[in-house]
Image (cartoon, rainbow, N blue to C red):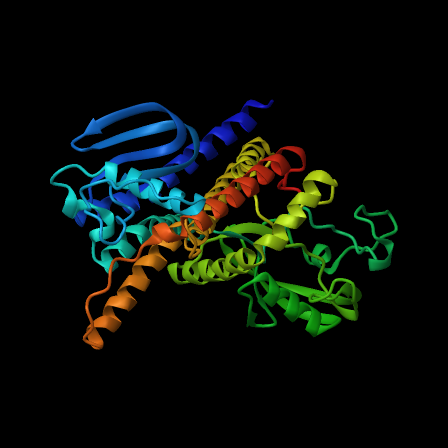
Length: 434
């Protein structure tokens, strides 16, 4: 295994753990601010690799870096009518027994004097804020990473700068070749003396701000003489160019051909163009809509992952990727022949997209996800608001323990999905090339 490949996996895991740590911090800070007792703050799952206690909270790192949690006391309320400081006898029935066992476990964490520091007794909006803190931190991280990518590094774009790969001869479109023959005629650009690195700044006195501007002006002009403004080594120059007519692929549909359009004979240069913060918001909004669509179609996408894993079908590039697959992509990025700038850009984009996806996934209003707890807090707020308006007695706390059987079922489905993704990422992974 290439050491750069291994380094890429390690860097991605560190970035993932950093994201998880901040996600859990997003829960921890408001929980402590609102007086909830937090006994553990852990990054990772499994056995503990390192921990240290500070005050009433144990902070630590576990060996499996694919998640994290904070432990708040009193997540579940006692059964209505029970003394919240005492554990009641076990109920009968499989589901009821499951619910009451969870209640008992939650109540056993409550020590004398902690009765007002349990999660379930906090105001509905405090619960919603505490549980929203994790996904919110993921969105903040995604915005920071996307800002680094777009504002600091830039997005790859074609600039109106003559590429070193530009051919100096006219090759008919029908011949589908890239090498010049001795019988080929020189391009108008070569005849006019254009050189690699020259920037096209104006065409027939019309400004050129981008490569699409240059393409549109050249093609629409047709054959004939024109003045071309360029910058060479920072100095402005004007060249007299005589365009010729050529058949070229349609800009919107490359399968179609535009007949006898103006032809200069230059290729653009790919550059990293920096964007504004406003464009970061638009870019992130666009990706958010795509991720939301993917989450809606997640069951269908997972069927595709199943076929890819067990039938050898091609992985959907728009389909879900697990932590293992993303880690492999991290290794592939660092081991590639791309420039360092592009490696950093793709890596930052990978971490940004991962945080955006994790944040949105956690907002799904189902337990055990954060969104399920947020939904419970909001429903409690609606109930209490309605009771206040109607002058009715204050309702009891929303009892999420009643949906624990469904919660466990969803957790099992999520574990199966995670296992399937790990297997698919091992036997039929998505790569940068596919």
